[in-house]
Amino acid sequence: MTDKTPGELATEAAEAIRALNHRTLDKASYENPAEVGAAAYALRMLVERLPQTLDQLRTGLLWFGAENTIRMDDGTDPRDAVAECSASLLVARQHLQGLLDELALVSARTSHMGGHWPDHEDDQDDES
Image 1 (cartoon, rainbow, N blue to C red):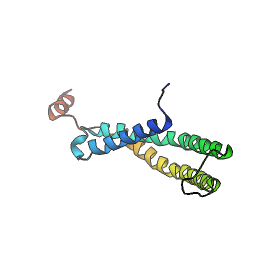
Image 2: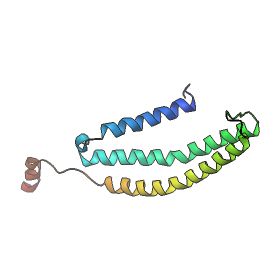
Image 3: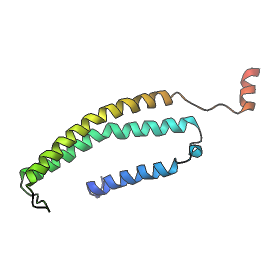
Image 4: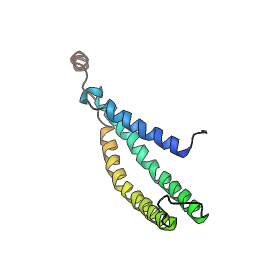
């Protein structure tokens, strides 16, 4: 698969979203409505995959907590931090469902969108 660490892969994903944000600053960055739909669908897929990522992040954190291999740099009890992070990951997972529902609607609607044909191509259709 890959020899990259989970942190490296997550950083690459974050950088890809950053690049997308920069690429689409100008509304003219999309050549046609279908490209908007393709981006919406890809973002939907990203959000569909995030729950598993959050679950596995939580599992890793809980494992380190259970093995007592976490030390907090501020001297606090790591069990409290693990419990707080674990609960927050569960809440984040629940919030993703609302985001996914909205992106699914956008993805479904934009999948039916296309641009207008150039005028000369529309004329050919009318003549037949």
